[in-house]
Length: 294
Image (cartoon, helix red, strand yellow):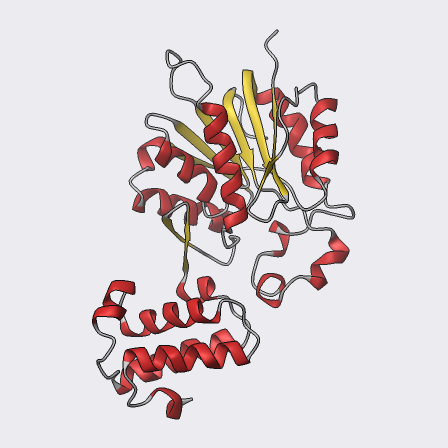
């Protein structure tokens, strides 16, 4: 690989790397190349443009070669760099957390739509994120809703530490708490909004996932059991008990699962008032229900 980058300019290295990744069958080769070159040179997009003609050093070429080898071995760029943007915010990752994906922003979008329907005279909402992971959903919501307070639960202590670090980086530590427990087991209060991106991949389908996902995302955050619905069967009844009257539950769904999830919500005496919100690919992705006032 040294012959590919040694003596090149930043722009020439980016173009060469993009071609290499594309020939290896990697999606978004151009984006991956820009991010890897920027990481090796310590430059953001603006810096890469401004310094496009500068020759990369031998040390930078060596760093870039190391990053490229990891990418060619199937490691996602977000894992290599240890950070992923979600909702326009940077989130640090760990081995215990999923890489936040654009599809999950649909949950945030629907949550904000529902919360905007609350009367302005009501106090800021209290929010729970079940299986908080990196904190992406919870912290995106707290970033958008001044005064809101949120709790993130997770079984994995490393995930909770990661979410707590992200809260600190984003200046949200004073409005976020993190609790080690299964689903909502350790919480006794009621909440206005409960959100979750639970594991929903059918056990037999995990082997068919992309290499980036099946080899690098935590298995427990993927495996939803035989039909992919095990987590929903556990969390929906608990959420129904912890919602304040009028409060909403919003969960991410896998392809083809929205109808079955709505059935589970109705069985827990929650009211399904609106159709699922689709992601950019048109897949019903965010499913919601409300606890009806007495």
